[in-house]
Image (cartoon, rainbow, N blue to C red):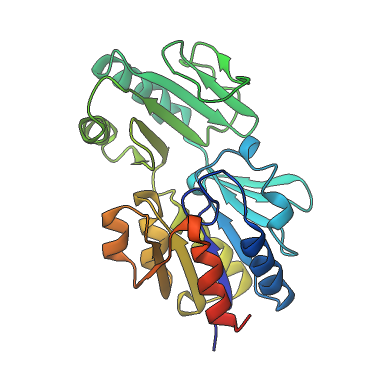
Length: 261
């Protein structure tokens, strides 16, 4: 029997290098949706980066964003749940990060947008973020804390951040120079397990796709997992299969095979 649920990362996986969903991939997603199989998008993207993606989400309308911190109902246009970082944990952690990484830019990702320090270099144009004092009081649940520093090697940034964070939270990464920090225990896989439990779908009935280390928990939990050929070596080693590259419509190729499309 083909999988009862598809879980897929977006950037580097479902989405091409041009940031778009290709016609072939869109056709495959629509075909799987017509079969009654939910395709759950599981991404590190913040909500504000999802506008062009929601039309492809399908009838179930659920999406997992911010590395699992936010569960969003695209059909209703509302946040279902946020597993945020507790300020009692996050505010001292920010101070520790600032002391250890004086040239790093720090950010707080809310459902409503990004608040950042002056040193945090925004990649968005135009830039919708807000420069502010992150020491509190916080404006609401913080989905992710962000640490950006291009002045040190990426591996050094990741290792040092992980040591500072310790057991207080969950650090991960998907691009060089940026570490994303979620509440303790919050990962893509953690949230996907919740969604699947609510739908009565067992791990053995899930196929998952990913390309970077922040996908590892999700790929390790799913009964069938595909690393993209363009993915990080640790992901290719951990997955049960390798799919063609994202720019070769790798997810669509596999879905066509699995579901006879």
